Length: 389
Image (spheres, helix red, strand yellow):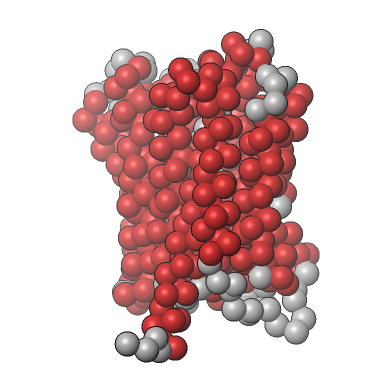
């Protein structure tokens, strides 16, 4: 049976989406792999836990810094090439991290890994789109990324026995190599760069993107911030094991909510603004419930709502950003994602400070709930949220 052009195009699309998802897994894994064994790392490196925290901070700083420039690279040279570059840098950073348990080396290597995750993330989402992936595929890309972070938290501690302090980095190296193998077998993406590609400054100054940036910073950014402190908050009325399982629901629901948001954009675009608005209400209610939670059922419901609220907007925000700036779609997505990363860097320690105030952290969750509700007033219209109609 002869292979038609339609069949070949379908195969290329599936291969491109699969390769993009592989990059998403490699990126997501690195956001949580070191934190999953922080105590083991602190002992091996001979430092305090706060220093181990700098390993992840170094990654997020360079990840944030590469979002808009990385998007411009994608717009100029293609997502497939930048995906390969990002996965290669992740592999190099992971390999360098395994040389010796030296704090300075770890911070530098993690900064290099952050460049790779920054380029890989923005190129991966663009590659999925350029390969013919739908808005649902975009949501799936987001889902596997956050799912990989959750998997790292669960799997890396199990590998400490055979791999010791190198467990976070050895697994990151393996996933980066897998991504590279899949990418080499995948087709190059079709070019969508116009004759004159917009500069990063032009993208950053585009006020049309600001509402999308605020939306994504509120939903994903604040959800991740609260997720970092949820166990600490819940341990005041449940034991540590239960607190970890309950807090993990935020990430678990994100795995499902992100593809769901993409499905809404693809199949029910007329209702995407309503769906995103309801997700903001859900997130606000979730943060509010956690601020007053005194029992396990209330805490579980709060985490479920927060997970839904933090995930639905992923595909609408990214799809909308790419449509708003057809002259620089990847750079626009990078800007939106960069604002969320900045929110995580700034607000994580601020919420941590509220644990030294009356209420032991409840104030931080209550303020976050109010921010989620306030974001409703600046909710983008359905066209800006990627509605095809």
